[in-house]
Structure formats: C-alpha cells, structure tokens
Image (cartoon, rainbow, N blue to C red; front, side, top):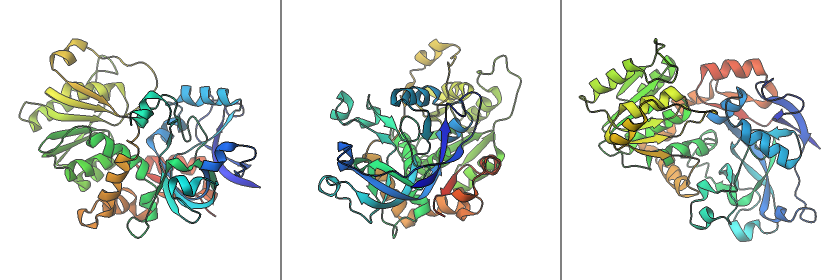
Length: 389
C-alpha cells in the first residue's frame, strides 16, 4: 500500500540544485518482528497534525543539516528521506513489547521527541540523552513524520491528553520543548532577557521568559509582523533590526546594540538567546550581554562563523550554553504542565496568536504545493500540516 509523504531525494532532486519538499507516494510502513527484531518496540502512528520547524525551513532552503542528511542517506544506502519531526497522532499498531516496556497501547494519542537516542552511549547512561553520540533525528538523519502513517520507536513517544491540550498545540510540543530547554538552562527570574530571532521558537521563548519571571523581555527581529506578535505575546520591548552598512556581514549591528544599552541603563542584558542562527546574530548576542552574563545559542546554520575581538568574550566573563533538542523527558513534563494550566494563557496564546486559530497556518497534505508553501512560510512563523485526507 502506498501513502503520501513529503520528501527529499538526493538522487532525483539533488541538494544544492533543488529546494523545498517534494510530495511523493512511498510504501506504508509495517511492523514485522520476524524480519526486524526492533519492531517489537516500535509503533505505527496515523499522523493527525505535523509541525513545520525552523530546521525544516533550513532544509527547504538547503542552508542547514546538509551533512547530516547526506551522510545518513549514504550510510543507509538510499537516496530518499521522508522529512519532518513534529507531530501528534494515534497509535494504530504496536510491537509485542511496547505495552510492557512503555505502557503505550493501540488507540493512544501521542506526540514524541524527534531525537532517536541509542540508550547505550556514555551520555545516555548519564541521563544526558539530548547529546547522545549515536542519535538519529527524525526527518534529518532518519525518516521522519511528514507522511500519513509512520513507524517510530515507542520509547520516543509522549502520551497526550486532548482534554488538556488541543491537538494542534500538541503537535508543537517538540519545538516548545526547545524553548523550555533554553529558558531553564539559566535562572531568568528578575533578569533582563533579549531574544534574537522572533520566529516560532523565539516566540515560544518570549511566552516562557515572561512566565518564568523575567523582569524585561526584548525581542529582536528583521520581520515587523513577527515583532508585532512578540509584543502581543508579552515582550516588553521590540527592536526592528534593519539593513545597515557594515564592514562585514557577520558584524554586530551598532544600532541594535545602542538600543539595548539604552533599555538596560548602559549595562547590557543578563541573558541573550540566539534563535536565528546567523553569524551576525551570534555577534549581536556577544556584544549585547552584560559582563558576567549568559548567552544561549540555539539557532543553527551550516558553515564557519567569525567572532571579531574573540578575547572580549573571555574578558567579559560570558557563559555560553549550547542548546540542542530537549532534555528527554524532563522538559516534556515541564511543557505539559505549562500548557495544561489554562490560567497562564500560554496554550491559548499559541493557538490564537502564533497559530492564528488555524487561519492560514494549517495546510492540508492533499493541498500541498511548493508555491503555496513558500507563500505560507513568508506569512506565518509557524505552520502545521493536516496529514489526513
């Protein structure tokens, strides 16, 4: 049986010679423990909604994860990758050991973590699975969830309660967890926090920074619509980063830095979060953060970065934290509690403001076309696919 999926085929499409996702028919996944022993701990999920992440946009534009995609496909001796990693759906088939090991049964509604960890390496054994040295990432280094039906290891699943969190919001647990991971790395209570990049995870970070008690939250972005959304979500101040003449593309933006100094009474922010992935954005963080402050790097772009005046970073005594994924499943528990609490307004803000109640932000898989996708990505920071006919 064939199903529809959004894919990238390096042989047919190429990496540098193409862009976007290509809708293809692929075989529907099956569980067969006689052929593949690991199917005993896997499930088949009927995907309801799938989220489009910043990393998906990076793959769409071929500016991120090129090495991981190409090397993993070469290792698997194939050329086609099913993309995507954010989802909510129903378990329709489970391997023989799934209920015993994970308590998950057919009919459960689940989301799940996109990092398929090995469970055996030094980091996994220490409880640091987010930096597993042998992990695969759904939709990047192993097949993902932009398909009507998918096979996933049951250990990656997080059961969800649709009476507490609506399904469209359950589909963004994974990226929301990135923001939870970033905002729990340091104590932001009473802090001045600047968020460089107000895309989807930057907007989640604004919600969480306010919820966790930051005294001042500053959103910085090139997109005026995203900044307006950031303000609505609770940013105390927003700064519209506009093109200026600089000696190098990677240089920090003097205008932005001057505004941050003004907003922080000449001190700089206590915590900077880099959520865009550009070299200049990283340098903005380094320059905008006060002596002794913290910098959280999350955005990813391929290639080399330049840091002018490197010694300045050391002399300022900055602490730099690199955030990848979520802490499995510690940050999932925090995310669930935050989104399930109707009194804080965070779930409603995600649905009504970021997802705009589904108005223009949900694309039915049957309606997918590259030009429609390009238009939607330009209009909205967060998109979902409705994966069923």
